[in-house]
Structure formats: structure tokens, C-alpha cells
Length: 266
Image (cartoon, rainbow, N blue to C red):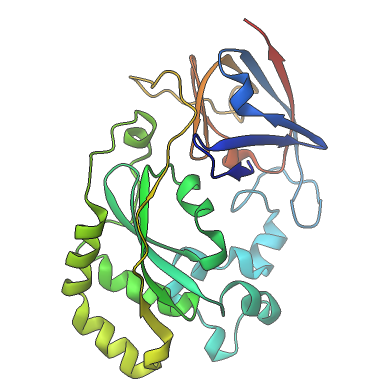
């Protein structure tokens, strides 16, 4: 779902060549029907199951984008000469990254490519976020994140996020507090990787709000693999989710699925 960092965030649902501006569909009934066909988003191979949100099994095993270091960047092995696709690694991993603090369902730490700010925060449904450090590579960002995880969570409680229950936090104060706590680890990493590879960010806090008319009280999920038709009144969009009056659906999960989408006015 392409997004625009507007206020509220602007969402577009792309189905084939058709683009549906979701912010304009609030209050309307939406039907999403899965045809039963899944195609790999890389090679277009027909597959019975999607791996890593959109890939067939051969691509899942071959592509750098599906390697375990994507989920655990501290395990990056580019420097060992064993990257699955070195050119892909140059573009996506051996480039500037941001270590950040966000408030999606509470305080969390995360990393993203510098070019993905603020898209990554929107993807997680964060209501506020602030850069903490700028580092030279994804591997280094992963090592910093490991140090941070001793003090701060690195996961979002998606149910809390979808209920709009994130607590108010002073992210600037939290940033200063965490930087103080990981100072010894940062000093060691700077000594090992070069002092010009880690920079403390002084950015202000980003605040984000989402097109949601009604927050769900009880979270029920639609699963297209079990029930190929998901239908309901669109009450909001946040993170990767459409919020329908009948339940929520994680659109990212169904990347590569052949679906039809119908919108009916109430």
C-alpha cells in the first residue's frame, strides 16, 4: 500500500493497474475476494504458498531480500563475501541507516534505510517517531539495535496499535535516556568501525495521524486463505491494515495474491 506522509496519512491500494485512494472510501463497503491464485512478486511463478510476503520458495531461498539477515541485520554477512546478491546488498544494506525510537503501541526501537523515513514508521502504525542515530550500514544499525534491545522493546503490539491505544511518550527524553544507557556500546562500535560511521541525530519528533473514523474495540482478523471473501464497511487504515466493521485485514500479508476489490457506497 503506497503511502503519503500527509495529515492524516494518505493511503492508496494498488490492485493490478488500478489505484484506489483509500482515504476517500471511508464509510463505504469494501469487498476483497481472493481468486485462489498466488504469483511470486519477483519471478511471477505460480505458487501454492507465499513466502516472506510475496515470494515463491525458490526465490525465497535464493534472493538476498529473503535472507535471515533482513530480519536480524546484526547477522549480515556481506563483509564475509557470502551475500546472496552482492549488488543488491550494496544498494540496500551498505548504505546509510537510521536507528530510531517510535511510539506505535508503546516505546520501541527500530532501524530503517535513511531513504525510508518516514515510510517505515507509517508502515508500523507509529503515532510518533524520532531518529536517534545515523549509521553507515545496515549491519552497524543491527549491532546498535542489539544494544538498545537490552533496554527497549523492538516489537509492536499490533492489537494495541489498531485500537489506537498508544500511550503518550516524550520521545526526546527517551532518546536522551537510551543514548546514555548504550554509551559504552556506542563507544566500542565507533572504535571498531570508525567514528565517522555513527552520528547522533538531533532531529525533532515526527507526529503522524491516520485516517480512522472508528477504532475497533475487539480485534478480529480476516484470513483470505481460510475465507476468500473479506467484506465490511471501511472504518480506517493504519499501518498495513484495513479496519473494517467486520474485522481487520493485513494487506501486506497478501502481496502476490490475485484479488478483486469492489467498493459500494453506503
